[in-house]
Each structure stands twice: as C-alpha cells, then as structure tokens.
Image: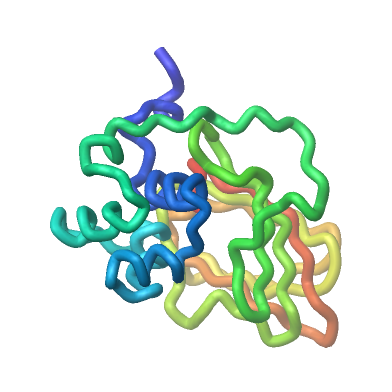
Length: 190
C-alpha cells in the first residue's frame, strides 16, 4: 500500500484547489473575480484555513471551470523533480518573512523542506502556531528567538531545534541582521 500521504483521500482540499487553479493559469485574484468571491476567500481555502460550503466551492470551481465530481476525482501526479535551482523555489511567505519551499506541490510528499529568511523585526505572530507533526531546523546565520510551549531560547549560527509541532510555537528574529534557517516539517503542512 502507498504511504498515507500519497493517497488521494489525503490530498487537502486547499492543495487540490491550488493545483487546479495553477493548471488553469489563474492567479488567486483572477479566480476570485471569476467566482465572485474575495481574494482572501481563495487564499484561506488554499491554506486550509477555511472550509467553504458546497455552494461556495461550486461557485469557486465554476471559475476554473471544473465540476465538483471532477474536482474530487482529480489526482495529480506527484512531482518527480530531484534538484532545484534557488530561483525555482516557490515563495510562500510574506512581508518580512520569506519561506521558500522545495517543490511546487506537497502532494505525494512526506515532509516539507524550507529555506527561511527572517528580516529584522520578523515574527510569526503573537498567536502561536500548532499543527500535526514534527519540525526541526538549523540556523545558518543571524539570531532567532524560538518559543515552544513554555520554553524560549535564542539560537544563533549552527544551533538547531526539533519539536512536536502540536505544541504551540513561535519564531521571532532578534538582532541587527536577518536570520536564515533551513528547516523540515513532517507531515507537510506548508
């Protein structure tokens, strides 16, 4: 049997929508306009932070266009690329936080690998993240304050971390220079 992460039933609704939208050559903004929904709605659905009603999903899919049955039957081919140029890494961060992911899709993958760059003052936010899985990383340059549950530590070049991602966690850049981290997370959640 295939790894659970490669089964069709495990393909998140948001990931499925993103793949179909990109294959149709549409930006989030263009799909939102066609579907008569906000750009934020498309963004939240693709990030799996919003579960649309059947009616709202149908309206979004009409903008691609694809039927509900085609949407749920869709099974993309897992990405087969082995090597990636820096310019090929998709940017999934925003503002002062750059998150460059290895691979365009998480479908069929057991982990996410990120090149993270925190500009001075960058912070993942006062509300701490928590999600299924484990994550770890190594600081390449700069300094970062990492809070996991009640524990807090400032890490510098060569220092690393590894924790259960179900614990609330936060990353905050400290010091005058940007912080660069290479990290991995399993199962893929970014």
